[in-house]
Image (cartoon, rainbow, N blue to C red):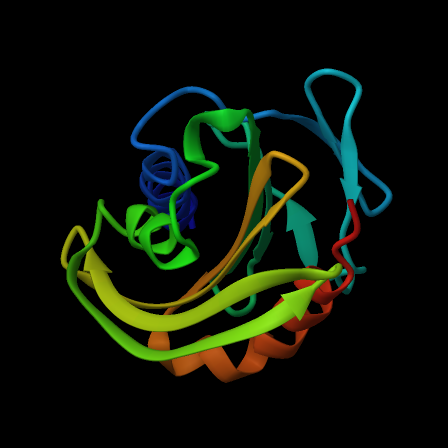
Length: 173
């Protein structure tokens, strides 16, 4: 069990820290009751996660949740500032997976989230030789970039994807 927790902590670290080119610029400072708190008195809302998802303490500043039954993790992170304003969503999504090997995009969908264009990408890859399935959403709004990530073993993906969808669809900034 300890090995699983360590692994998911590492997976979260790799994925969330690579989102912004390894910068420690995450604005997330806390999470409480569907609200993700950012630096500079900003916050955003997310959808409700079922009780099976517990808050995960990570060494990076992200709101992260783990489901022990499915060995899956959901996280969200944000950065506010002009550094990424001109980068396309596809490029920002690519940065999320810089720490993975054998990364393969299965599906990409553009859609509207909280009145802005968003990109959802479903992909597979490996972290430290372990096969994983990823589902990510990236959206930019009001000079901020937000990402939502669902990581699971491929065989457990279907069991948590509806929870992930509810989580990011609840986004409001």
